Image (cartoon, rainbow, N blue to C red; front, side, top):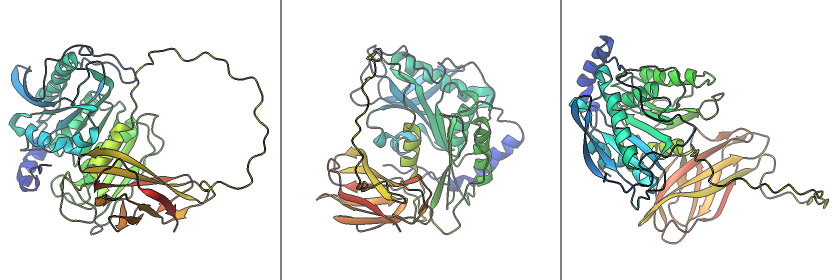
Length: 434
């Protein structure tokens, strides 16, 4: 995966941006009303059922009286009758649409398994000043062009970006709450405006605790906009200490159903690709891509059923009276720790997997260890949210410092990428505590 151009060398440019915001230059005004259906009801876009005329690559579009451009990525084996997820990836200051596309749209492309149409718009002067709402107009115009030609699930539109790209994603969430289902803002601030900003949108904020370009307080402020809009219970999420080289992800409680807010603070500076246990960012080893994909993919399509539900009456006979077994099941006992494995994605020569560690009991678990046996030829190359002993054969993974305590019925996950054939699940997957 191509490296993203770092923004750490652009501190002076960021300072200019912040000064412009203070002077009111980035008003983020709304140029026009978005032409899109309301979240919650899937509508077949005009492109469904049509032979597409658009193809993957750089596209040009007239928007707001200017010639603008974007990079489009259509899934392999595109099916004109299948509604696809649509994700906009906004680039950073002095970055480009090509940077976003070549880096796999913040690492989501290899996780999508051809379920998603990706768009990387190009900002004017390689930024997202959104003067007079021009970049929101671009978002509207690209959406319209794509949806008139391709089949899009209108309840599955998303946006994300880092730094200035995060600011633009925040502006989209504020101004287009009935268009985007969720956004992720990585190390962002209010640089592109917030026209509206009173309606709920599922929100995931990620920020470094000692960000030297856009202070973490700016990211917290964006987050709190949607904590309020989504009706979540206000709190001060735990954040990692300096030198811990970890991240802590918090899911807010009390949010309106379907509008979660998630916050991940990491021990690091201004980067889109922090790595637990390392001070050096790395696109291929960062935990952010998997967590963002998990956040976006939790939202199920609201496609209406094509057939009526069965009308068969429920059985009238009484349930069997056979007494339950007297031997308790092997899992689910009070205080029991369980581990569930799933393959997230595969590619030639490698795969990504995730293990959910759950406390099915009534008492708190203080520490956990998962043991599993990888199939022949499989070897872990990177692992997050846990500490592994061994990379092939018999492997054990103990909790990280921040996710070892699990209350009753609580769960956490760790993930890893590995070489080898992911078609064979590991054997002997089990969990013990402590």
